[in-house]
Length: 381
Image (tube, rainbow, N blue to C red; front, side, top):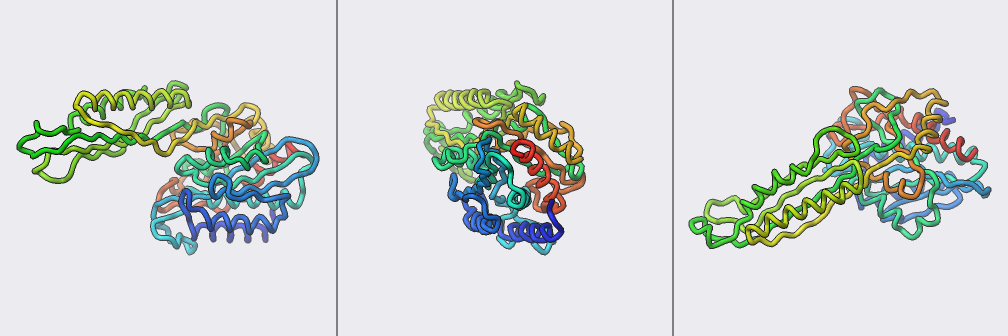
């Protein structure tokens, strides 16, 4: 059990992280801060540089048994913070506005509990993952050759969730978070004088036909296994002038699906539509892919185990609000482990994630740590 002095120290740690946010791929100082705090717990070993700035602390019982991984995220967001809290971001244009500072602190709290009362078999791995916000972090960690040293049998994560009752958990078997991907479509033709547009090749017509065609790849709002959604997020054509018929155009589109296979089909279909539209207007078309998130699917055994642990410590739970259209890259850990994602309510009236006035509620720290600790004990003793 965490003591009052533990909570004072952990809250101070969380607020220190909050002051010094680092965005995806830049989490150098955050990782160093985490490593320094972990060393005080004397884990069996600490791995660094996983998939970039990832850190993993291993607590090994030395008795044969499964490996249980608990994940938190290192990165903040490129959004200015507009709170009045004394620990607000000191880095212009960046803020911990998704609660990853709190998630890291919950994991550190779990480390304190495991260090004091070691598990009786197997291993606990505390995984501090980089670059969750752009979808690249989990893939990079799992692809890192060093990850083979800690490949988990089970994997769990908690994300705080505003608009849900404080301390209440939502989880379910199956789809939790949709797959998503950003696709940038660049069309190139030839400029001409605005008085002689026929002498050039403008992307205007191709773009005007492509945008509604992309939207047609969606299948509606029902969030089931057939769910597909297409959102055009940006479009740009030529330069802001009246004398030139444009030669350059770009469309940004975000694709979402309930399954990774469906996502792959959508990307292929979007590329085909764009290629056809460009060909019709004698344009060159190129593509770039961004923010690629796999679908997050909760394993039945892992979810049942988590639900049992949540009930055992007296925390309320249900499946409300699930699955979500929003994406989360934790699903990658479920490719090789029995994995479950849990959402921990941060208050019905709490500021939303990614909002400039968001701040993680410190009182969630002991709740999240207790859930993780009970899961670890139920599997490893």
